[in-house]
Length: 216
Image (cartoon, rainbow, N blue to C red; front, side, top):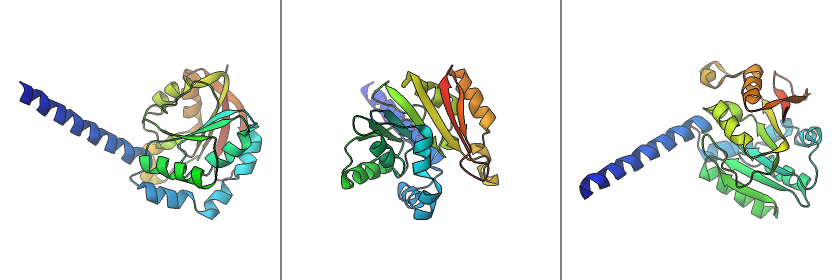
C-alpha cells in the first residue's frame, strides 16, 4: 500500500511538472528567459515603448501601488518604481523564475528599493496584497491562455477605485492565431469582472491599442 501511494505521488509530481512546462511554453511562446530578456531589452524596442509618455498618460503619482503583469525584462517596472517614489511600490509579476531573477538583479544593480518581484501563476498573478491602484499589461495579455480567468482573479487584488491598463497589439501573425484576441473581446471579459473602459489613448501606430479600465 505504501509503495502504491508513493508511486501515485511520484506520478502526480511528474504530471504537475509537465503541466507547468506546458504553461510556461504557452505563456513564453516556447522561448527561453534569456531569449526574452535579449528581445525585450533591445534599445530600439525600448524606445518604441514611449515609457515616459505612457507614465504621463496613466497619471502615476508618488504613493501609488502598481503591478506590472508580465514584467519581462523589467523595462517598465523600474521607471514605474521611480514614478511612484516616495511611498509607492511596484510588484513585478512573471511566470518564469529566470525572468523574476533577472528583474531582481536589475533592481539591485540600479539601487531601486521599491520593486518586489512575484512569481505568478498561469491563471493568477499571486500578488501578496489586495491594495493595487493600477495593474498594467503591455503586450502580455495575448500570451495568457485562460484570459478571462486571469482577469477575474486579478480583479480581486485591485482597490475599489483602482484601474487596469492594457496595451495590446491589434493583430497577430498567421502562426499566432491561437493568441489572437480583439479589443472588443477584452472589453467583454473586463465587463464580466465589473470593469469598463474609462480612458482610451491613441499613442501607438500599427493598430496597437491602449485602454484603461475602471469599475463601474
